[in-house]
Image 1 (cartoon, rainbow, N blue to C red):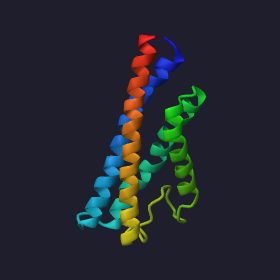
Image 2 (cartoon, rainbow, N blue to C red):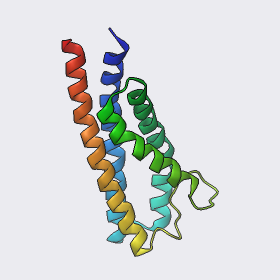
Image 3 (cartoon, rainbow, N blue to C red):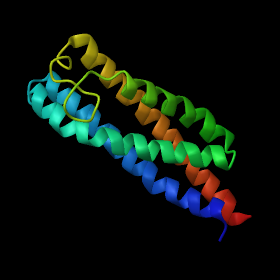
Image 4 (spheres, rainbow, N blue to C red):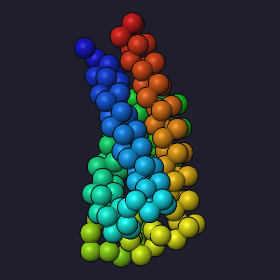
Length: 141
């Protein structure tokens, strides 16, 4: 079995995990907007998931870059750069993560985070189906 087949098989469950994390993020911000969740609980539930999401997404992006999967590079490399930028520009907090309880209640911040979640979900869905296609092509050849 070639390494390309193994990476394409590995990318599918990772893409599913990433989609689950983004859906969790979108639902959490919707609960915050409808007052089912307070900002501290939101940040306590989402901040521990930020670094695993970024690490998994970075792994997929680096594997696409290594094996020159051009569509994957176009999808994942800008998102990886955005994640790095966002993490480096995060507010000063005592915990790891990008969500600050004092800023997350701002209406513009809430809308931006939900919009970001939907964009990431679309990119991860495209990544999932592209990975499925690459796996089928790699196995059939």
